[in-house]
Image (cartoon, rainbow, N blue to C red):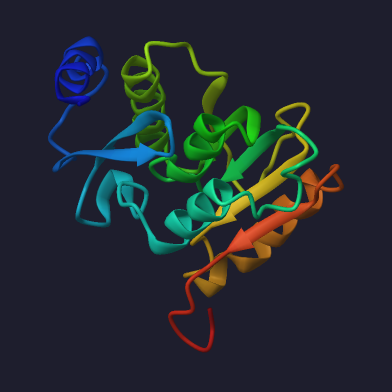
Length: 192
């Protein structure tokens, strides 16, 4: 049903950045809303580190949003700040589902932020609308406050124990906010 639209979307945003880091695109249904369109990579490391893949916890958070199970749902949409957003699946799906009124997607790697911008534009084009979303570099060691936000989200960011103090510092700088922070992570080892 969305094949022609997706092709149109890819053409509209294809000049955004080099494709050599990426393996292709995922078109993911998002309830009754237009689909998410994400440029992805199967590998890790290099300029994208881990940010080019769709990780399990991000899918789980998206599913919780589609089922209306996030703590603020029922109170209306809120402004979301996502740390380590990777492909943007969690924040963009919450925006598409109406659980977020605005999304700020952040990551520490400039190539990942460039891809987040691409994914915002591709998803917007698939829905033929402008999305209230933006992407920014945010280094956990030196966090900045990007403005008004109601909740901080992070999915699959607890995989490298030496980065935990920086994550804690970033959360400390970004909290308190209306709905606090929600971290969703796959247990990979006793350390994480």
